[in-house]
Every structure is written in C-alpha cells, then in structure tokens.
Image (cartoon, rainbow, N blue to C red):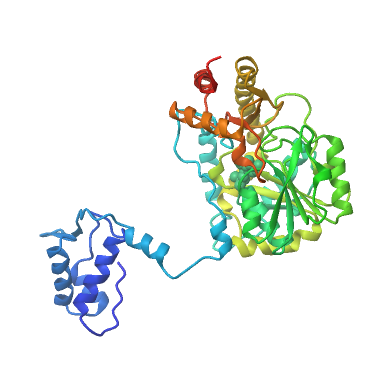
Length: 474
Ligand SMILES: Cc1ncc(COP(=O)(O)O)c(C=O)c1O
C-alpha cells in the first residue's frame, strides 16, 4: 500500500483519503487486507493513533471492516470501482496526438462463440502443450534464459539459425541467421519496418481489401495509406501510385481473398519496385498450410535486387499469444532494424525463443505443422464443397489451397445485404467476417470470409446449415 505524507496538515485525514482512493479506483479490492496499523505507522513515521484514526474513519464510512485479531479488510462497498480512473483519463486534460483519435482499435478476439468462422485463429487444441511445457522447462534450465543480462536485439542466435534453416527448406528462402530478426509477431516486424522506412507523410500502398491492423499501424506512424485493388491474379500492379515508398503484400495467399499472386504479377511488382525505388514487404503469414499443388515460391526468392523484406509469424502454426514472428531483410537495413528493435523493447522474450528453436531443430515443429495441415485440409474441403453445393445461388468461392480461411464473393447481394446476413447469423450463434469489413478504400466488395481454425470439423455442417438459412429460403 502506497501512502505518501509530506508531514504537514491533518495526517490522519491524508491517510484516510489516500486509502479511500485506492479502494475507489479498484487497486485495493474487497477482501484485501490493510497493513496492520502499527506497521503502517512505522513505515510512515507517525504515531499509531494517527493511523488508527484513519482506519476508524474508513470503517465508519463502510470502506473497511475490522475483525478483531485478524486485521482490517476492504469491505464490499457496492461502489463500482475503477470509475474514477476512467473518468479522469477520458475527461482530463491529457490528450493523445490527433492521429490516435483517428485510428480505431481493431477487434480483439476473446470470447468463444458456438459456430466460430472468424479468420486468423488457429485451433488451440492442436497446440503441442506437453512438448511445449518440456521445451520451456528445458529452456529455463539453460543458463541462457536465466541470464541477468539483456539479450541481442535481433533475437536468440539459436532461433535465428533455426528460422533461417526452416524457411530455406520449407519456402526456398535462402537466408543466413544474420539476415533474421526475431519479432513480437508480424505486427512488430511491420512496426520496425515502418520506423526504419517511412517518414511522416510518406505513401505506403496496401492491398485492398487488406488485413486490418497493418494499415492502421502505418497511419499511426504518420504515413499515408493507399489501398490498391486486387483481382484474380493478385495485386493490380498497374494501379500502384508511383510515389509509394513501400508496398505491403500477401503474395502467397492474399489476405483476405485467398488467391496467390501470379508469377507475371510478381515479376511486374518487382520491376515496378526497382523503377520507383520502392520497398516490398512480403507477409507470408499462413502458407505453411498447403493443401494441394506446389506452392509458388515467395517473392523474396525471385527478387534479384534485394528490394523485398520477408515477414513470417508463428501465430498460425503455434499460437497467437506466443507473439513470435520474424523478418528477413537485406544487410543494408540490418543495423537500423537492430537499433529499432532495441528502441522498441530491447528484444523478444528469450525463454520462448530458446524453446521454439529446440522445437524446430528436433523436427517437432515440422511434424506439428504436418499434423495441423491434415486437420485444416479436411475443414477447408468441407467448407469449399458446401459453398459450391449449397450456396451456389448466392456465393462464388475464391479458389485457394492454402491457409486457415476461405473467401466467397456475393453473386448479387450488396455489402449491406451481407452485413445483414452476418447479423442474422450471429443471432443463431454463427460468427463470420463480411469481406467489406476489410475494405481499405470507400468501395467495399460484398462477400464472406470463413475461417476454419477455431471451428471443429464436426461443427462445420451445422454451422453451414444455419448460415445457409440466413441467406434466404431457396
Ligand atoms: C495477413 C496477416 N498477417 C499476419 C498475421 C499474424 O500477425 P501476428 O504475427 O502479429 O500475430 C495475420 C493474422 O491474422 C494475418 O492475417
């Protein structure tokens, strides 16, 4: 309990006011015990009676109760705690920069829903809990995780090496550990890149529609964000604004529509970046889950000029709450990126880095991804077949053979119609994101996104039946 006295005025009154405030703000909760009066008096260097007077006043007003022999406890006051803090911060004189008023908080996934087709969520039941516990305790036992010194900003050497090998084998990305920086998820990789590459007012092009957090992040850095349309072949390179300093793309599995960027478009994008002296950020967020055909290689592998930065995440293959991701960048950017990472948070937690490095090195990660892919492949097929069979009058499936979600475009319905469907579905326990919620510009396409990370295969048929009823009677 923190009480400060400046030695003047009514000391009992001051102790009473400060404790009362900690109760009202919720810092002290019902049932919490106040320090014994003798002890607090000693800490504050006041007479014991000064403290007991304050405690008696708190008791008289019902803030605390005293139990003889056991102490003084915060009472159930019935006052909604925390209100004062909230009111002070929203109505007080402190204000964030205007940018922060304009940026909305994206939805944070928390509550489970009965038929959960939300995108971006892996199946947590597939997470190798037992193995992970073993790896984390092993990492804890290694002196490295328990060192009193800060680690390297770029990340633990073992994980940088493991990732360099892993992306080499699985994605054909030839990189050495020195090219890798471990980040707190994709989101931090993009944050570091924005710090290093974008000045306020600079233009960054993103795909439209686009994963919601990155454009907001770029705007928070003062950048101007332009949405560039995508078609069946991916980003429409001809529509890129000439002055874009950076282009943020998802070539392997366009988020959210799901198609892969064709080789012709990839080549055009790289040539465009070279002509316009621009940087391309490639977000390869979920291509570990591949259901048929040979994956197109990442942009990074056909970039001869070093204009591409490759970003990866363990949020889909492991768990989003691990907050582990990485970026692979050309040597020219490395010193600035190391410094930016240091400025942001010194480095990502070492314990999990060591555990993950071991998991990758001993082959457990690859086995886990293969197992998860089999599970997701089945769900992917179930949803794709149902859309094509039962939703044909309403929806057209976007072909996709990767990842954790599918997209389907509305044949005739408007974006507003689809929002109404989403509302009707939510009332039946079926939750999905309308495609329009990911629009960057004013022109939103109508369609739906169906994620299958968070819904078990057994629940898919009933979820789809309920959803089908929300579209109409035919
Ligand atoms: C396009 C895209 N990139 C990256 C991520 C993962 O971000 P992070 O690694 O910050 O969890 C997601 C998650 O939904 C995504 O959709």
